[in-house]
Length: 155
Image (cartoon, rainbow, N blue to C red):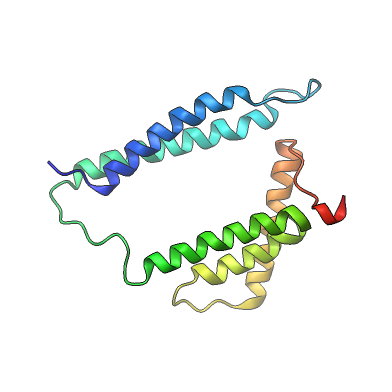
């Protein structure tokens, strides 16, 4: 019996969760920091990924007799490659310019990249980009007490 992509993705997700669960045991935190601090985020992510993986396995099992459509529509591989390269450029830019400068621009670019055939207005996109950056900053700096990159040019 051939396994569906959903089932395979779910199994790989669970294996990845097991690997990352082992890796989170080595996360160090400052001595004066109260628990859970920066150790909480990886556990939350692992739980969410594990639940999603189990849901994919169940969906793959339920849909096992339905014909699968091609995974990538026409031009899909090119779009995925472009998105991946945008993430690489974002990571490199964040190294030099820092989180607060790079993230609003990256969010705006990702909004326009993911819009597909939809029409996206510039002003709401800028507002969303700034709000997402502010929310991420507050979550990491105040909630998780994790220092975000300031950028090599600003240190």
